[in-house]
Length: 431
Image 1 (cartoon, rainbow, N blue to C red):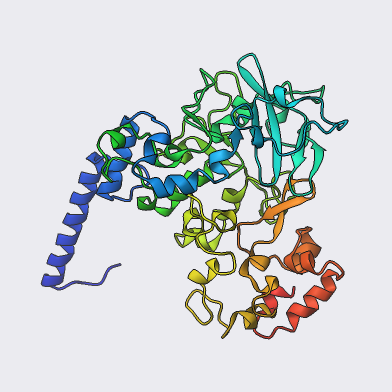
Image 2: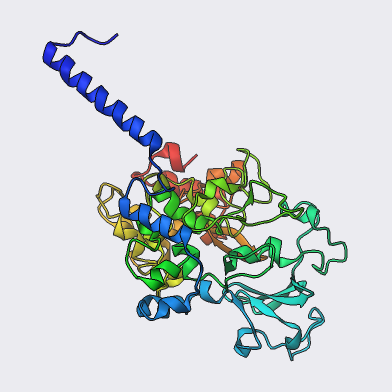
């Protein structure tokens, strides 16, 4: 029960309630675009791109020369390449005989990838299919590529492939929506191959005709959820809400594009705590690549409003993984010894218990261990930023950072080392 109020306080309270009710009444009739948090410029941006058509990244080059030049060198701008236009796109020497390789360079319509792996698309009719081998870029060797019909990706049973040659699995439903801009599932054609400018900024015809900041989408003006959804649409494992679509099952967010709500088109893979499966470790950390978004939404940084491009520059940079700063510096942009965001020790080496400047003293070594499979034998970094303890390894079979480096030691040794660090809570790291 509320305490009795004086006459003046009752007036103020009544006035506040009246203003609140008027605001609610107005909100009921207002139209707000998703993810704009009431920002009028962001509202205008979203409306403009939803009413525009796609013009291609080349149209952006004349005004945004620096961004275009950096973007054009990124993996996103070159994920899909036509070797007839760019012969150097094929990394291995296909003239060198290998029993696993049953095709020639003339059979390759597109290459896919260049950092960890490279796969090869060939065209049959109006569909593309992936040859059943892939090139391991890191270890420079051929590996088989075939998703098992059972026990792997959720979509595999809907595209049975008993011959193991991937000819039952067209790339349109399974790949192309994330490797292009505005892929049309009816015509099986995109507005542009690769992750072009309009994938993140929305259709640009209105902006090209009359360039202003209020008629092209800038994810930096969106709230943190919708801003990160720009990246999560492809850097996540999930399913469209309306699968199947026209009788086919899709592995990308069909219908979503910049300016809309990703949650209206896409759901992330669910996880049952304590269960290890194809997608997740027992604690919910991703088990495989293309799950940075699944990881990130679990993180404290995400809930505090950090976005993907707080750390990464989607236009490209000279740093690893398109980071805005070198990997040894990027975390220190927000986390400094004794600062509000930690670490609480007086120096980085006091926090890590490893020599300053060493790889082991980098934040990512412990908070982003490379435990998520890209291809057999090649892993990428986790993005929950959670410190996985040796105890987690013992109980839940999740690889930890300590034994990831100290491969000659066991979890018992790692637990004892952590227990000796008096600046750490024994209830968190040594159990």
